[in-house]
Image (cartoon, rainbow, N blue to C red; front, top):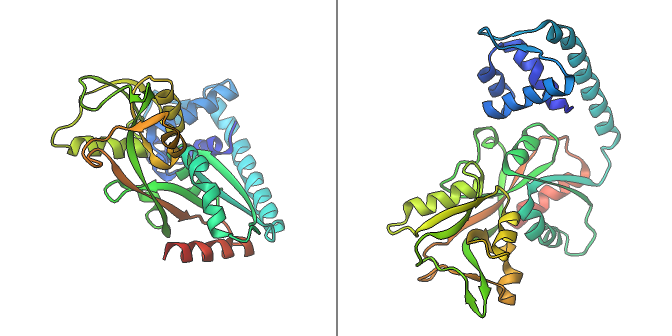
Amino acid sequence: MEIAWLQDFVALAQTGVFARAAEKRNVTQPAFTRRIKRLEYALGAEIIDRSVHPVVLTEAGQKFLPTAQSMIYEWERSRTELSEAGASSEKIRIATLQSLSVSYVPNMIKNLYPNGRAPYFQIVADNFAGCIEALISGDVDAMLCYSHKDIQTGDHVLDRASYCIGEDRLIPVSRVDHDEPVFSLRDQDVPYLKYSKISFLGRTTNLMIERCPEPPSLLPVYEDSIAAALKSAVIEGLGIAWLPKALVQDELAAGTLQNISPDAGLFEVPIKVSLYEGKRKETRSTGRFWDKVRLLAE
């Protein structure tokens, strides 16, 4: 059971409408509905009567509501006390995509702290939706994600200060056998390893393909929201995928993977690496961290 599920339940009890409660909790309605169902499964009882609109609490839900509110209160009180007690800690929490945790975070820390005297970093690797949820819930000091000028990050993070601290490119890659790529974008029905359509890299790749005057002939055969997982599938020879160049630079150098974009990057997509400020209480170490980030972004 997660504290977020309890907060969702209380929000739904207050509004009686799934869509309104999801908006209040800054999550999509499908995700909100799944979390309510998970809470009911964990409790072993239905706590929402969905047969009426607005929805109401079942008898079990009415009994559980005061308990949920008390648990939320105790959690928030404990969190505040621990946060204040650890205000002098050198820990900096950053939510980031799994691909960036591998390909970018270590180099970022090295660039920010060239003398090697970096504070303690706690990296929370998740998908794009999970990173945003961690940012808006105040669980992290920063979110490190890709950004693109034509892809909206999300209304709930537009008010956060953000800094572009790096650049990368999405490139189409194929496994190499006998010094030749296994697949070519000039082929018909090229096996395509795609991102989920709601993921940031999925939306970015789809936009590029839609804008191509002569898009490649792709046959989707595999889907995953995580770039590192698609990279593994490409290495196994299952098809092609658009991957961040930084994530595959070692394989490109070794010749095990190849960029198959023809005509000087026709099917490549420039993307930026951006840091978004969280709203956790600023400490001495996080204050210095953001000072360094601003200098790096200039």
